[in-house]
Image (cartoon, rainbow, N blue to C red; front, side, top):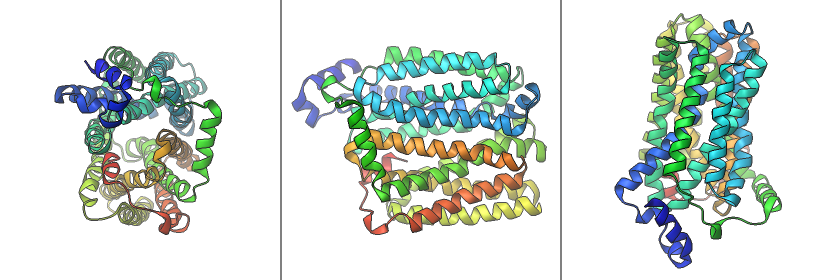
Length: 430
């Protein structure tokens, strides 16, 4: 039924201008769509986070260093960044299904090979391939929502999708901890391969092509490069993208360093680490949902600046508690939770302001935004490890990311050039 709606709307240009395929769906069909797309996007956080409890075990099993193991996370983020730059514009040209299915197939193959990785260098390279596959799922799932819905309908569907996606970072380390209770770290990658296989079947059977030929972009590489050039020449857009990337850097410094800090320095076991990590994810996701309420009273600019100030202050507290040990694990986790909550307010508003400036090239803008976010995250993930795997280096990188984001927001982004944001877009990006 969904396929028939898409084809019918794609054939009728008059209808396409007034009614998008999503407007003709029943509530049941919309719920099914949210579940399918949510599962596709969730494979990203699962691929990134599910093996976190196993980082110390990988270090011992492959007889390598903590910094080298953290670089495997960097490899995933590099793949995500590059993949979005390539796959986003490609899906606008050839349609959504081919890049999606190819990306999932790449993820499956890379995950299977990770099971047999003989050393850390091979594992790192395979994680790059995993990231490329995940990028396809992330970009295409977001583009499908844009194909089928607009305005308030887009906002409602995407908000529900964010709730489905939000469970993945919470469950991933816990799932990884559960797997490690009866298998080793290689079993985590076997589970990711099985998940990829299930998703490729679901996508092939339940997700039709949503971008009709008549709506696909033309002009090839030249048009894509022209779109990217227009984006990088916009100072405000570039500044906001950097703000989002630096806030993401703080987040990934926590993601890559927390396993070593909480397990080795504070003595948590794998299951306890999963619970602590999940609590941080609850703070992050709770803040993104609370942001929807804040938008009813404040502008995205006001929320973004306030969140960056609060995040920088919380980051400095984190450095102090990590360096002095005052309050032990409790104060460390509390200050981490505050930083994550601030990031949860900053991360949606910076993209909302950036995307509102280039609606004519939304797909390319989203690809560049995602690439910069994950690219900067790829740099920050091993940065703390270069100075050791303790709480102090991790805290310094986290605080530095939030402080740098605040500086860029205040000094680089011209406030006078920030127009109003479509409320539907602002809500949709939360």
